[in-house]
Length: 529
Length: 93
Image 1 (cartoon, each protein chain N blue to C red):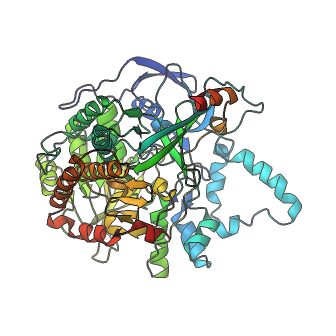
Image 2 (cartoon, helix red, strand yellow; image 1 turned 120 degrees about the horizontal axis):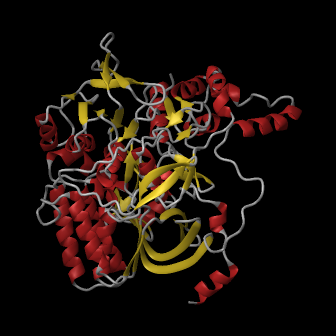
Image 3 (cartoon, each protein chain N blue to C red; image 1 turned 45 degrees about the horizontal axis):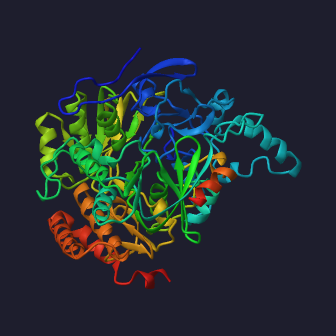
């Protein structure tokens, strides 16, 4: 039995909890209590989690934070469960979602029909449409219902009711936690929700030390900082923490936030103020076979490595030279995994910080700019990659293709703000490339609608420190509008604003600062009308 | 060898390009004909990629996006059921 778990790590200690057994298609597998289903399966050597809907292509996990759709499996009889955010339970039964079309996939793959053509297939004459649909539904799809209705168990299913609170924080990353600390200290009643089993967001995976202002976070390792903030939060009795709870919808007319709770349940929360700090997710690239198991988001690899202590593979390459890619390369080296190279299409210098780039180059990992990936090799999982040199106009240099042997590819080309929940509040959205993608117009107090605030990466792609400062500020502004707190609020706001200015003071941030200035308005109500 | 743009609905780059070539050259119609951004993840991976391809093909920057609708995560219908008794007690407290 393969076991890809790391038991010795120079910095981290993995507290996996109790050992339990889960079953994949009736085959027992070793798992631990603190692992997600996807992590446990991956540790046992499973790379293919599902098949894609049309061409039945093998899919592994990609983002590992519950954003994409690649890891959906049938868990305990419920189809289409995102296994990368579902926690393991003893005796859990997991099934791969397989359908008759798996056997037909070679033929379906042969039919290279453009969409405008296959949308019109089997629609004329009218009477063949319904029987044809019936057959197609049998062949493809994502999961099947049992013929008889499942027994209605009131104990584990249904809506848990409506909670009322003053301040609801969605996303327990650095921004959300700092907001909860600042507002919680001043007596605001808070509910903070996160879709993982623990708070901390992406801080839990950061093993490197932060720099910037010593007063905020610098000189500490990311996960230590996360632990410290969680400890601070646990001392505040007016802050209620709901983990494994993800916000799935906001209904402005009713002012209700709908939450998904573990075990087939939902919860409604009504709050006076909301803070959206949902963070960001990985951008992807288009290249041949870019969905093969083994092509992962850099953040997903970081989760595997530093949260669950599982090796993603033996030898990998990284795409992109942003801080995320450089950091993941360093984390891989720390865990004793070979990094064949860091490749990037950028023509200028390395985009990340020099410190991080130097750190990985010291370990003999080459950083190769002006190169991009053409395709991933392999049938069921990645066995290599074909790279190519780029001309200044981003076309491929002919004949410059070469093969790199690797068993996983990390895409770390940048982050995209998680704007989905923001958009449900009906704000005015703009697409700003300097900030990473779709972001809402906000005012100086981080408000983007009448009752909702934004902080962290979902408002502009930056760092953990800036996210913390923004979160703190948003928390303080919310406190002020709720008529809580005392004179200390304004002094603290000044302090944070100053620190934020300083943090963005470097010449790296000129473009970012200009972009933020452009989307910040005086009066948010005018924009919304 | 396929270049997948939308993972949820298996839409490839050539699918999108051929749809643009046959005249569906704005974001909304492209979305309706190919199905990009309408999968489980509601365009989390494919939206920016589709924008990029469309911008490249028609030669001007496209910034249109689609509207996200609740629920943003898949939930079961059973989880929305309200228990009469349970709910009553919760509301009273």
